[in-house]
Image (cartoon, rainbow, N blue to C red; front, side):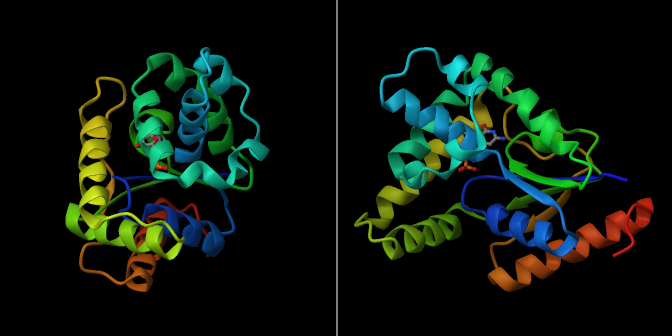
Length: 210
Ligand code: DC
């Protein structure tokens, strides 16, 4: 039987790493839905006008662009994510992915609440903003970007605001999401905790033989 794991949470909380580990551990396909919004945001920075059309025609190869993680693209992604026409153009692709027979993990902001409310397991992964900014700053500087910590922190604040306060599919935990605070956890501990939560939930539902 196919099953879906929905992982939501704010930027830099660790959900991407956790999603990848869950996919590997349980043998599921993984979709980082933030990349979809990043691709549309990048197109907007390049002057594209019909963003819904860009969103509707995304192909998997498009998500491999090296610069999709650049800070300017992050901000642009949060901006285009407010647009109802962009969100609805991306919905069909995400819902199709969630039904892959092999099973799927999707991470984003509205997976458990809007895209896949019937997911077998919903995780809400979060951490306090200082911790998230430190992690993101380390990641960016390790990739050769010279950016002050304060700028990373204030960018995160802006994105949190955009993601949580927009009227369309705002970031919030689904009522039945399992919450995982990674503020005080190592990456490894967070991953192990997530695997344990998913295993317990799936065993409860009788959906998993792992
Ligand atoms: O997860 P990320 O930082 O790569 O996401 C980039 C932006 O895309 C994020 O600020 C909000 C938006 N997004 C969204 O609105 N819904 C999703 N399911 C995934 C991302």
